[in-house]
Length: 81
Image (cartoon, rainbow, N blue to C red; front, side):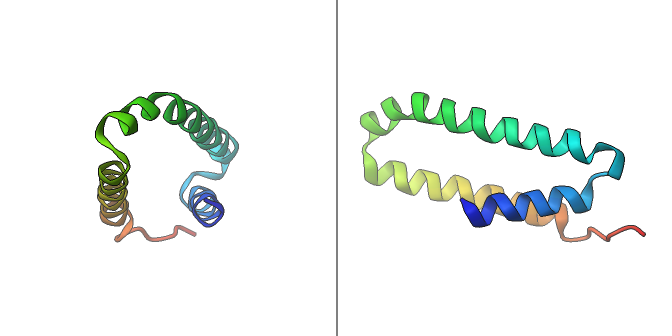
């Protein structure tokens, strides 16, 4: 998490207009902490119902999907000015 959070924060600082960097970083942190809270409460029953092994595989598949989406969205990004 330490590597991913830092990398995403750096990407936000590079891709967002300087006027909106504070808003973007605050929104990112809000989403992260809400996601951690909701995930802990909502996914416990899901993991219990489908099992740890399937949950681990499903999490890996979802992570890979989002990594591919991020790659497609950022591959042609060129830093302005």
